[in-house]
Length: 170
Image 1 (cartoon, one colour):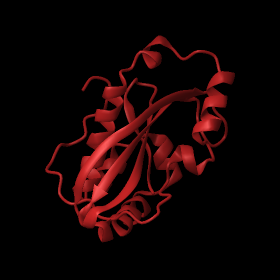
Image 2: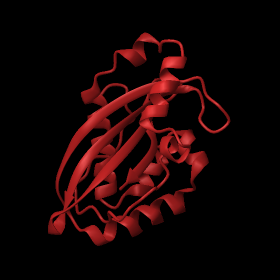
Image 3: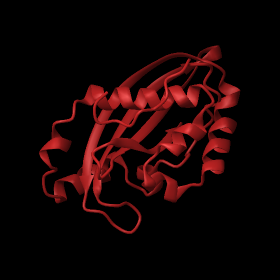
């Protein structure tokens, strides 16, 4: 997948936990909701052509690679390859521990489909650096027919690579 950091591929074992979660989505934790993201995008100059032309399926597939690591109990590897934006917001141990604690009670993933892909650029501020960001939302079904929403946030880093900037499970 061009333009995305190589995330290790592995079997997709059980997703672990889906209690209401607000695990560090850089965009959401900073109060950047879809509405405010849209307002911010309208107030900003147009994104570079490379950011505007990215295929939404590429973003969805990148997010699925990230979720495969979460499903496989490999959140530490996900954090290792994350954007510096995410790493500044939460340390590795807390990221891994929180995902494990929240996913464990839910059991295995029985189905997952992406429901939306959105992208926006920001001029930046103290909390959210300038850049192009994307959110991919998934509707996920777990063992016992429990459902939840997963939000994978990505940032196109300065080298052009899309990397994880946050993960939220609701």
